[in-house]
Each structure stands twice: as structure tokens, then as C-alpha cells.
Amino acid sequence: MFNPPPTASYGVLQRATSENPIDLAVEQISALGYATIPSGISTKELNSFKNDFDSNRAQYIETFGLEKLSSTDELNTVRAPLTHGPESFLKIATSEKLLSLIGKLIHGQFILNQQNSIINPPKKQYNQGAWHRDLPYQHFTSSSPIAINAIFCVDDFTKDNGATFILPASHKSNKFPSSEYIDKNAIQIEANAGDYIILDCMLFHAGGFNSTSFSRRGVNHVYTIPFFKQQINLPDNIDAKNLSEDIKNLLGFRYSEPKNILDFLDSRPKM
Image (cartoon, rainbow, N blue to C red):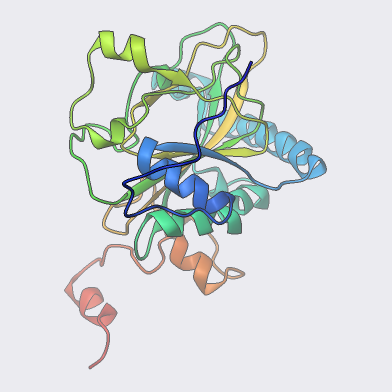
């Protein structure tokens, strides 16, 4: 028998309000560091994207070589697919619903720092199966998010196929917790294909072990304040001819490092 939580309260002077699913996700991410939202993508579009994902990965392996990718532990990752893949990769990175949510979390301007296709192989260990933050090697907290992680689920994320493990609210702690704490508090996030799993980038997380016979696919996005340099320079690798100014700003066209002092001075607003 399910017992619902109480609805009454007393002694409360302030209360958060959530008027829609995006507001609720923002509230949960702020408190616990994670949430899931549906992308709104249709079944037809999702099936088409699955084909795009596989063909893009095959081309990537052909371009860079199986030996090089294996020797650098990059075989289960495709870097910056929106720079060399179908337009659908740009589309999932610029989802209006997703950007609306991120805009409520990161105050002011934010950019797409990176986009990577991630493959969780069946019955194998892989490099994302270790606890990490998506701002690795950092041990600090901030009063508001400076980086947000959005995983687009190409397949269902289930406990059997290695759905992402998280440590709720660990974005509020400087140190990585003890093994005993992890055993007691780690949870897995299950999500449907076509959903976004949203994490504060300072939340400790890890891919689970995929015990099925099929790869579990996702596309990870990291959005940051412009202060952080991109993992791969996107403006130098994207044709901007048909991009709107808003999309170019999101991809970092306004925030590339000046090559010299004159470039810096020319970038300054006129008085």
C-alpha cells in the first residue's frame, strides 16, 4: 500500500514554486543534482537519429582508425559529432526545451563546451564506468551551477544495460565520498530513449555495467559559462553560414580566444 507524503506544513516562511515540468526539474537539480526530462522527439525522429548515430560512429572509426582509437581508450567515444555528423546532432544540442532549462540554472551566458557520443559496450568495462565529475579533478562547490551535463538517451537507460549511477547532492560536497557512503547512497537513473538526463557537472556519476547483449548509446553535452575553454574548438570546425546568431553564440563563436593583442582590442565594444 502506497502512503503519500503529507501535504500540510507549519513554520514555513518561504517556499519554492514549480509551475511546470521545467521548473520542477530545475528545483530537483538545484537540490539533488539531477533530473530527467522528455525531449519531445517523435518516434520517427528517434529511429532516424539511431541510424545517424551508428553511421556517424562507423565513419569516425574509418577516419581515425580502430588501432588509434583502441590504443587511446577512445573506441567507445565519438568526439564532437555535431562537427562531422548529420544535422540531427546539432538539433539535439540546441533543443529549445533543454536550453530553457539550462538558462534557468546557469545565470547569464552559457556555451556548448562539448558534445560526445558515448557507447556502453555489452559485458565489458569502459572508461565512463568510473566515478567522476564532468569538470574532472575539481574539488569545490559554487552557489549556482557553472556547468550542466545533458545526456540524450539514444536507447532506454535501464539497470540491466548500465544506466548511469549518481550520488545525489554530491555537487554540494568538495570531497569524493568514502566507499561505505557510496554503497549506501548511490542510485541508478533509469530513463526512456529520447529523454535527457540532466546533471550538475559537479555531481559524481558513473556508467553502470551493461549486462545485456546490446550496446547502450547516448550523446553527452556539457554546457558551461564561457570562462571555460571548449574541449574541442567548435567554431573552427563548424560551417556558420546557415547558423543563427543565437546558435553561433551557443557554439562559442563570440568567445574564442583572441590570437593576439590586436584581435583582443578589436573584440572590445566601442565607447
